[in-house]
Image (cartoon, rainbow, N blue to C red; front, side, top):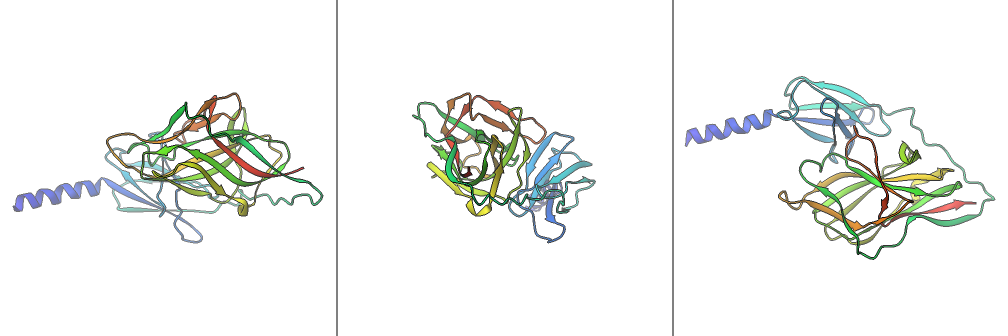
Length: 284
């Protein structure tokens, strides 16, 4: 019995020593930074911390010494090197002075027209895509996907984001929405705005509407923008099979899908779309 207990203790100790916890926080406020990006450049891997700013590194898979880069939009990037199996490494990020939201005052004499940009029809359901699959390997990697939206060249205030879901096999997933400028058909510079979070569960179907009117997100003159959905957290329903996110898809030459599964990879553009659009106030 003593040998069994000793073996269990040694095995548990080895597992514990093979894991290092990263804690990412704000240098000024000391608050934890939720869903920060963790990059491992030597392995070309990227991950996302949890809602408490923590991420556990498996040092059996990613050997020490290990270079780690922590970043979050609105903060200065920070690089450290994990030298030993210290239980917790605290990483403090400094707010960036370069990323400032442009103060936009809509013209007083402009006519405001509500417009929609993107794909507003649900589709027939004949082409129902297992749009994104999650497993233990990719659920924490911050997968991004979205659409290039053709808009107008007027000043626009984004009011709502609409996304049609036909089903989900996972228990729950937290997503973020990010807007980007577009060059050569791909997202480039992120447009500054407050964090947008929403949750999808295995009971979620139909149109999901995210109201962002109070965030004052203005798009000034860009004819094309990218509306990107970033995977922040996924609770899998099963570890033995794929956990799919499902929606209707269709072929198109406009409002194309873009995606990337790592910060170290380029955007992939696909001539297809899915039911997703934004509602804006257009100042004309």
